[in-house]
Image 1 (cartoon, rainbow, N blue to C red):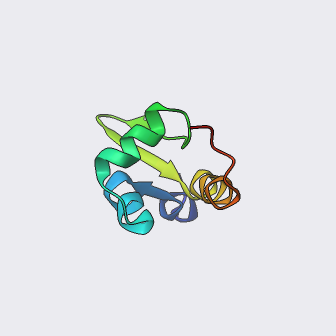
Image 2 (image 1 turned 90 degrees about the horizontal axis):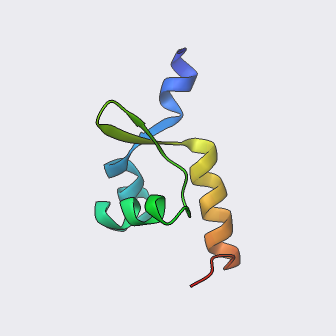
Length: 65
């Protein structure tokens, strides 16, 4: 993994801070399939691309309730 790839990965607490929601909410988004994340060991990560896609859908209101 090169340096750019490392910086394009966010921890759950970083995603929560960016979205201004709780960590639990981020885990809920992942569980619901709204936000794509993956595990490295016991910790979850979200890529920059997946976070941007999530934000686009959130802004457009593309999520079903």
